Length: 81
Image (tube, rainbow, N blue to C red; front, side, top):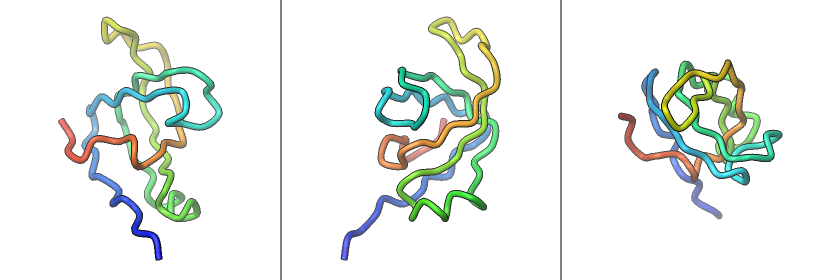
């Protein structure tokens, strides 16, 4: 039996930096400021992937638009901040 990583509790405002392989459907690195973590629909991905709704930000933290990202749990920080 494989032990999966626990889904961290990401507070709104947490900035996560993802490689292109750490989120689906984007095909590029992503800096994402968390708005909401969708635990309700993430259970369909066996807790390996989680939906995060937030704001993409550039290298200067300038907002670039709303993003709904399916993110690899193992790529997330274990603590929010």
